[in-house]
Amino acid sequence: MQDWLVTDWNLRAFRAGIREVSVVQAENVLGALATQQYSRNTAARRNEYEIYSVYYPSLQAAKQGARQALRPQPPRKGMAPRLFRLLAFLLAL
Image (cartoon, rainbow, N blue to C red):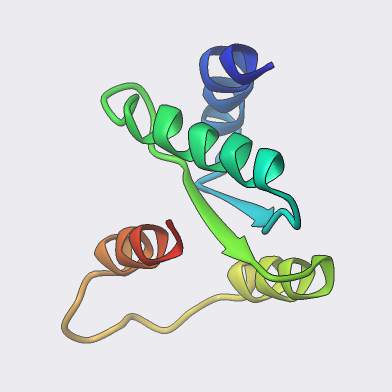
């Protein structure tokens, strides 16, 4: 499954315009390891596509975050939005 996500789904999602994936933080160790591995594998393929995993504590928070991401955002001053998303990704690890 991990291989399919990274080599097939992510590439098709990127071509369709997806740049962020909302991830609900797992409640158990195996789930947490799987989502962290997905994020690392995805980051390792930045030369093919750029999709960032954004971690949320609950499904409700993930839905809210996804809705927020769909809203038009005013340009940020200072730090570029791309760098901001990368920082959020790294802090979530």
